[in-house]
Image 1 (cartoon, chains in turn yellow, brown):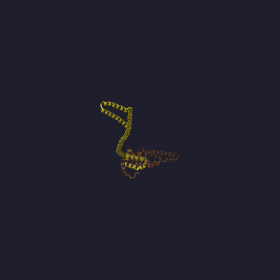
Image 2 (cartoon, chains in turn orange, green):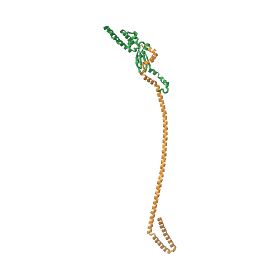
Image 3 (cartoon, rainbow over the protein chains, first blue to last red):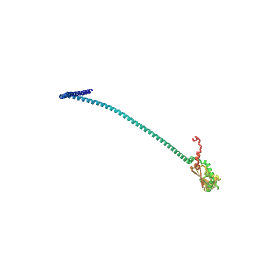
Image 4 (cartoon, helix red, strand yellow):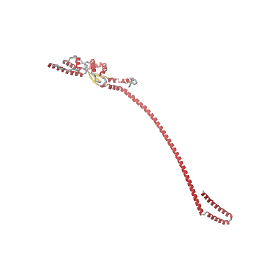
Length: 208
Length: 166
């Protein structure tokens, strides 16, 4: 603020000097011709001397220094403002990035979750279909097996009935082997001999 | 001599054994006679088998050399001329059964017929009779096989009471 006042002071002083000079020049002009001319020349020289006196090297150097200082101050202020702005911008940018990344991640996870759920549902659906197919196959297989077993059973029963007689005969003969005394069979033997007596007699008589 | 064979004599093998015994007996009687004639000693003669005794009894013959000779000759003739049948049994027949069979055959067919006995265990029971011209199968095996077709029906018609299978 002091710099601004100093600068303003310098500018006002410069303007005052310039105005004085211009008034003086106007007065000389409006005063007369020749005299004015010589006066003008004197005035001009005097004004020039005054200006030279006022705006001497030290004053100019002071002005330069003040100007440099002010410029540096302005630069510093601007740098500070710039730094603040940068920090603010960086902070806002970070926040923005965080928010955006969060949102993007959220969306992606949401999509991922949806795709997982969808895949899971498809897998369950597929498993259910497979289960249904397996169940149907099992029923078909079961029916086929039952039919096969029935056929086999019927075949075995038929075989058994066909060979049952031989089986039972074989069993009876095995069971009876050596168990029946000839004495116990005499009625059976004599019954057959009596039934075939006539033929037997003819055979023996013819062969004797 | 009209020979009467006892039922104890069933086969030609019996005739052979009998004839050997008759020969031994005749020799013994001869030796006894010679010993008696020479030195008045009575020698013992061997005891007769049942088959020889029954044969002598059936033909009302006393035991002497002449009778033994006649018997032997009659037996020889019968051996050569008498018919024979073969009977196969499932097991070895006892003597009593054989005598019953030979009695039937000698009564119904020929008085001097012989039976040759064979064993075929696979018959299970009964007999297979072979005559000079034919073969008669009276075995239980054949009887069972001939009625095989009746078995399924018979089994199906069995009424089994509940719990009776224990």
